[in-house]
Image 1 (cartoon, rainbow, N blue to C red):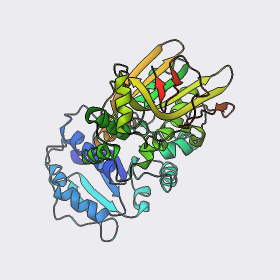
Image 2: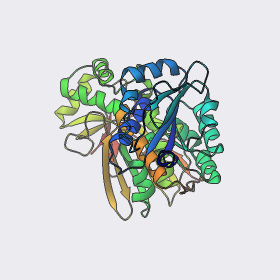
Image 3: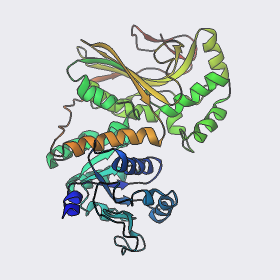
Image 4: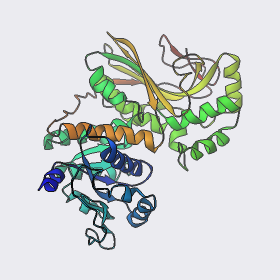
Length: 414
């Protein structure tokens, strides 16, 4: 009876995707449940969906993570015991494995197994816009809360999905979609909710920042720095979305919704690639006491209903807030009408950093399952001031006290 009562009180989590982020979240669920000493809610990982579920399951077992969960005392269930000979269930050929003594973990290639399960929450970690958006929608419709790290989905469909979540009496949280472990979503949605935000300037791509930091420190080429970032787990095989600015652009669109209440199409944010930055750009910047960073900038003039937003490589002084943000760190300066500048930073790349943000959302939902997060009140009644970021231009059509374009190839941030 005590075991059944303990199991029924556990918060059941299903994972969609078992790549870098999904596997890191699974590890955190295991480690948190086994070693937190009762400080956090108790979790049960019930399902893992992945198109290569059998292969991922074998890797999970090979890493010894399944065995780690088989100690009956690790989860606080007196007298419980692992059942290595338990029959498999779930999807044909995959099914359930006794990874957790308190319940089987089902590995599946069928999304229906997750949607029709008794999971309380679904973590979406497959990436891309589709089918991720459809599956988030289906999970919410099935009465499950959702945590996602998907910036492309939230940038394009976030408002509709948040509205659906509220209508279903469930939660959709997305801290990991912007800034990795840097808690900027909570900062804007909660910590600074009492202010009127006027500007957000940020480093939002940890991969590019790691690459630029390596180039700055060693004088190496961009390709060499990319190789180092891949070796450290900060860069994908194809880093084009990081370097061309589309990753940071999607994140900036999300921040515009949170900071200004604007529904911004990411394609309307002026973006300049960082792929052309070379070692001599850092040498020139160093001669002027600075360095290069990929910055995302958004500023909203409420009186004129004009938004200025761009993503581009920029010159920053070495001792500035952004100049001192190195490696895979992300950073943001948020300007409020009453609070002035608030600076936050945190790890911005790698599965571990993203998993921390995902776990924070899981914990928040598990602690208050009945909470309903209302969708933001957004408007489309504004004008985007287009910034000319071409290499040939000598001026940017944006004038702010701290950010402007010099007559060279880089934006300049003082």
